[in-house]
Length: 123
Image (cartoon, rainbow, N blue to C red):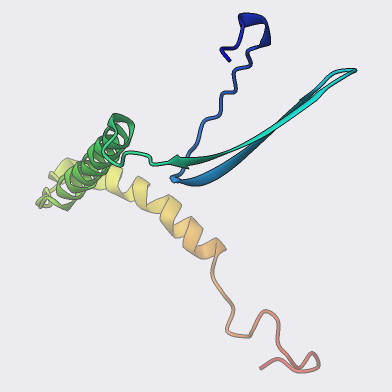
């Protein structure tokens, strides 16, 4: 018996993995009931274009990240010789030393512990 277009049903299911799947379908109305089962064997091709494109993008991303790390390492690892300052810049170098001296003075630790375990005595 060939089905008529009025009685035809289309099921669409997307399978992400390979394997054997069972589909149960039941249709009913006021006077009848139709039940059917089907077993499907799904084999997904591992050489599909989507898998190949994903792997290619992953490798490309890895190579770009590795190149960026190598470039950054090379850029900051280069030898930069120290430049001698001219005689007239002694005052300017003293100005740049003032903030570091102030910072070290403010962060100076006392000889005693800041939070001793024995509260009655300074160790």
